[in-house]
Image: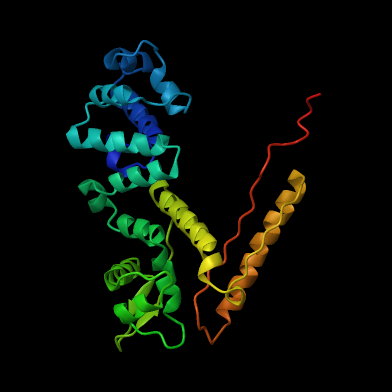
Length: 282
């Protein structure tokens, strides 16, 4: 059991925060109970807090204010708690993007997690990953203007500079003793909801760019095909694994290519177009 009161700024899931806060209160304030909290916060249901923690209830805007007051959060803590609730309860990619960016504006978050902004930027800007893949390519120049001119679609040299700074900050690229920009091995976590929101943005952007590539490139410069099939759940899982295995094969081929000339994007999508057809109903 933790001795210090849970600090809201270290959480990325408000239900986890509430769960650990309840445990702390019960350890340090014997009079605390779900019923006690409901009375203090002004809820009729004596176990409303438990229902929220168990994800059986969400918080409305009014409920967020009641929770903040009952938990005695200060102004900044209350604002963060509201943003966190809105992020966790968001149902669209656009809302998740908005609230993720709101979370990253808090000074306490910046101080506690100095790399979180860079992690978010790395995935939310498609060209960051592309720039990193360009680095070992034959003829690469560490020149933002030159890099910008090679990207399709084009971006500005200022965006390239920001992208390179992101790579350096995350230590997935570095400058050697000769001043050359080189790739560096480092792990970037995407487990929390803020980073995951950026990954969703990345996938959406690359799928959109795939659609645009139909008119942007000649047929001999791209490969686009699709097929629609009926599958059992068992065969779906089999094909899903085949895709994962093929992705590993592609990465192995690319890793062994000593004459890299262009950066390509390979997307994989496998998704349902119907509900289960035979659901047992007559």
